[in-house]
Length: 436
Image (cartoon, rainbow, N blue to C red; front, side, top):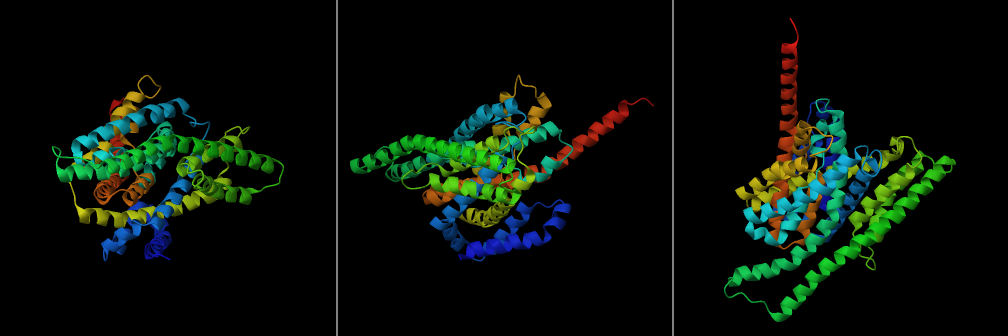
């Protein structure tokens, strides 16, 4: 067993022993696992870098993401876009693309040397995940409607970003050596060998062209597999053929099978999209005819627990990634990009997308500011680091680390404090307005 995996499993085991007490104190698991990951890898950072930059690590991270995407898709309540369909559709179909575009533009403006990877950077730092700020979703200081909207949105945006990420990453890999040669020779004398240009141009064209059929095949696999298995389980449960235990195993195996079929060399589809769409269709067909259209929690339990376990392992990996990223370099421009991504680059598109909706202005601001970054950002960042050349990979890794650590501070610590302060002010104003 690779040392990295062994240490990761030990760290998650240690956290599990004391998780209940720490959570009662308000200490989130991601923060503790990040510290454990850093403490474990501080003795040999370069060995850790080699470990995460390997085919085995890439495949492990991909499988983890497939499980998490499937779990996110199956946990949504209601129809395709949940109980707040129109609001969620605005967020994921308008605000999310606009956020990606603005982030890419900001990236190339702040960090020109990241030009070839701006699409990758945008896909890495914009998905939301409430793992580092679970207290926000449980906090009664937030209206129930806002919590429901944020929960559904976070379950969708990483699945919708994955096909864009799947196209942006190979394009960045192809363009990186061309840009490197331009920087080495100088813009005035830059020339690319005709054979090299043809090879790279062909690869870039293939990346564009193949991304569309890869996504379409993934959609077909997800729709067919998820729809049929969900329908079959509903019939089997209604007739007493299957029980809750069988349903739990089905929900754990389905994303792995969807991802596995999609990544067969003869198909070469996007395994992440296949797993996510399989989760959507499974939920739709499994809950058809139900009054609340919600998968019973007893059936969700296993995939939820495995998803939490694998997410904990990802947070452990972030600790070592943070040390690795900071040991290479630190640039204030990257810190500024992360801050903008966590605030205005999300707030602006969210606010604009919800104009004319039933969401009040104050709630639009809250939804825009409460967008934590977590597991999906880490996984996308690790995959990009694994695939991209050293220079671009280091930039993406540092952006990912700074964004997630910043989100822990902003959404895990500052946001609950700010909400409590606002609630105290509201109570004080209400008391002052009451007649004596």
